[in-house]
Length: 387
Image (cartoon, rainbow, N blue to C red):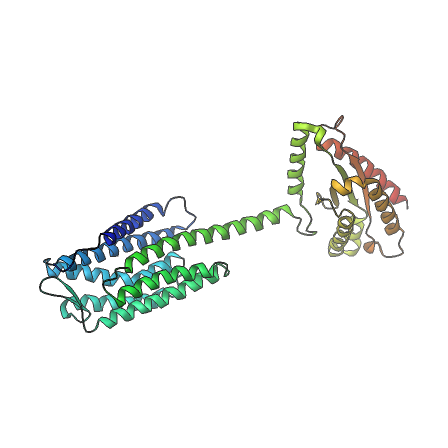
């Protein structure tokens, strides 16, 4: 017996093995990873647990001696073969595929050399009494470990780029945890930090990849939600957003109508059908965009919704609500001015507008207010057509 095995090392290895087994069981549950990534993460966790167990058994046999050399060789062979191969598993777990084949070939060469070393003793050998010793070609194992470390750093940089560089520093730090632990173990065989660092790296990488995919998924959902909530042509709020807004106001009115305060302006574009038929739908789209811009310029403090091909609704609150009469006069003057301009019809930004104010004593829902705005809008349209 040389020295007593460090009890702290024993506890750390047990914790690492249990952590990897726990993650291997949990990886398929409550995850947003695809089936292939789940399979590779599970394989990674299992291999890390096996490698850590082999490292500990090897240290145990080396410290106390007296174990069969053949068994010690087998354990060391498994550990030395698994350790450099883990970067490939980590890379594949993260969804990277392109660089795996050349790296797999390189690590296969390492495995062949390690296995042959059980006979030749070139990379490592076990003494008669069961103690591990580094062979004269141990540098080959160090070389393959170095290749694995460089590869994992390269992989992690790719992952950081894939995450749009937002978390590149975090990814590099995770890679450095693996590299520092491996380098310390290679330089001094008494520092058994190799699999401890691999366990931490694997767990952190799993968390990072989960968060990265969750962030990508949330970005996609937000983009889709933004697309559905905004009109594709004019970029104002869409019919979906309008319906949601109506439901919210109806709920507020049901809960306590006395606290609700808003007005509606319904706008209907003039002459859109004539413009489409005469100048084409591209000109019609331009006409809609120009009219919408004018409406938005008028209602600077209110949300504007496109609820139909030529229909817009502005919901007035705050400043626009307080300046309702001023806005009505401004719209009337603007619409009259546009209708009487000596320019082609397609260049006129003309629309009819109807206003209505919510009355808590008579209005029981948003639709009641909308009906009054609709009536006033058609009266305004008749007046403008006479111009």
